[in-house]
Image 1 (cartoon, rainbow, N blue to C red):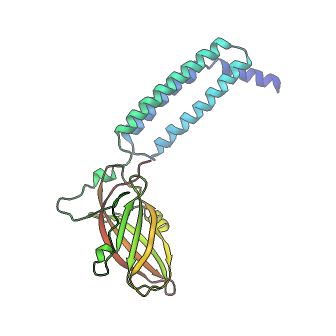
Image 2: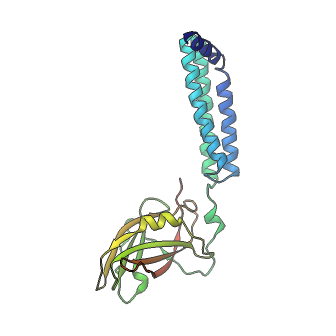
Image 3: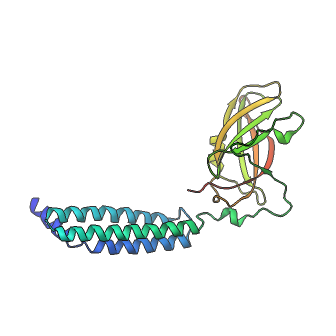
Length: 246
């Protein structure tokens, strides 16, 4: 067993020059993937996996060189890998900043003349909900960067049950982060008999799109009765929103 280990380390130590070269090729491949394919594609995961494997391989090479006391090769291997790795990640970061991972927002520009509401931001004065103004019932605030929101909801009378949201791209009716929005926006509510706040700062995330690529989102508020299970849309409101960037 010891002899086999020494033989393996000897072979591995001869590859010290190969890992930096493969890392450079992997960086080129990853850059091509960023430019050509959206974030989350199969090739994106393949490139990330190759980077991890190369990093593990480099650690193995360095250990082999230390065990075989090849100090000069160890220094060359480590320095070349660090240089290639840093340059590769620098180029990838530059490419990453220049290309959108998800072009959904750019593919769905807000049509001229479409009426929409703006989300609130930290520091904005919270508007007072008015029982006579249905559009004031739903208030959405951006809470942690583009795509991450929280909503308040007011209503006059409701049976006990659940309140949750459904979000759609306003021009084509495309469902947005369907299961995630429904799950994260869901709030159990008791029966209410007078106008008041039903939901307070419940967070949800829209993943389609990128920071700064705004598009129109139809946000619907739904109620599910605790007894009958009947689902009823209470309100819909169009907002100018953006998706979450990884």
